[in-house]
Image (cartoon, rainbow, N blue to C red; front, side):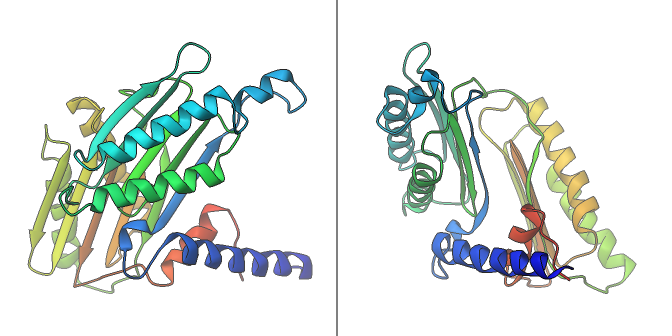
Length: 267
């Protein structure tokens, strides 16, 4: 690696570590930062159309109204969606929390509120935004995406290699496949001795689209994580995750994953 690339890589490590400190808390794992994206309008900054999305514009006001509605809704529902505004200024959005998070204890609402604050800070002037935290996913766009199947890979996190027997590998694979193949419900979980698996789709997907999404997530999980003590893959409309042998937390893998997302490879 050249000296310049080394400096860039070091700077990225510092920046990534800062993001993880800012967006996650040791006492609140539901805000672990996985992925974010801001959809930039397809026009050049000098055009008059650019002002339609700037902070203070009508569209920006609609985004804020939408995010507020999602946060309020998360006090009652782990999934909900809204549409705010009229033609040319319409924004569509949804929130989606892990179904094991309790609305009674405000876990879902706190996660969605955190996601909304981050999106407001990161995506000002954008036509859309998406943020995936440990406990929830929030997305908004100026185009319709609700009910649309989408198997785009957003994030993956993999644990450390095991070094176990083929029997253990077979048991883990069967556990995850059992959860994924539990048709017709958006949230699926299995808990065994020293292991567990969870699979979930966003609430806007049909049963068939949900099944297709989870099968693709499981396929990518096996391909991307291989033989690890724990792993998870998040697609745009679903995720699959598993733990085994008491594996907990993300540790330094969180930083390595963030670096991988921005295509920086350290020596």
